[in-house]
Length: 105
Image (tube, rainbow, N blue to C red):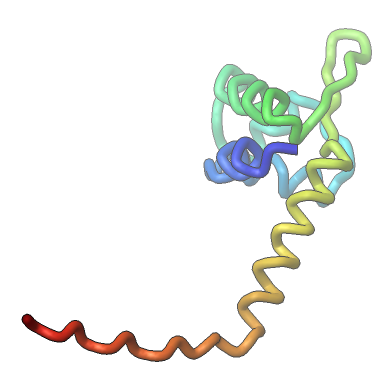
């Protein structure tokens, strides 16, 4: 998984709202994202395309509707990055010795 693509995809507020709803509900019809995100259906479609291309979500056609869900590998990678950052934030900072001043000639 490409961490940069994933992070860029979820960095936009509407796409993050879509990911949060999928994390909460498991699976959501594309038509239902307009309520959570407060944007039009064409805008939702654009954001879902970006998320699909980044490998964050996948969709399944059922009749005329498309149901989306988080891709397990992408969700696991996002969780691993969060864990890594959280662990790093809890560590004591390394103390770096001050560099000696350069002697003037």
